[in-house]
Figure (cartoon, rainbow, N blue to C red):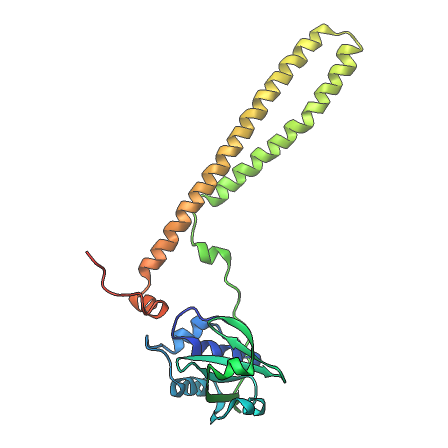
Length: 256
């Protein structure tokens, strides 16, 4: 299942899903770059043209709802006169639709008849068709962009956390020493030394804990600010056509 990210790219999303079904995995960004879209949307003729350039053979059909089980699936259905969906399967009770705008839908025939316009497009691999592996997944670093100082702060936090663990291990040793040597042996001079050691250890532990909390706060704040700045800079670099395709009814001149 592949969801559209721009209003007029339902046809591209349907083609990408069918291509993936036959082993030719494409993402919408690749298709969008190869086949620019009009803000007014994509007609059936344009979908057929793109399918041919993707090495698919096609056949447009006019049919009734009760003839859907005769189609070669998956195929594309014209929907509400302004949309395309993928017909995945037809059963005796429901029809399985992959809608790029809403996701997977299972509709009874009466509900389907209210949206299906009677036009379908069958697609199958042509002789020149070749499978293609999926593109590598987008890494987190690619999404957030460069963040300066990340490695240094992480190293500091790890060192401070290790120091706190060491302090936690030293305390039981000092307590055992005090019991064995001071209480049992009656060494009052050692008691003074151990008391000073406990006090110094407590101060160092609290200071280290405060430093770690500050480092975590600094890291989270700095990361959040830089990430938002990277996203905002990316949005400023996008062409106006991206916003026209994403929100075609919400763009216009900026008021003063």
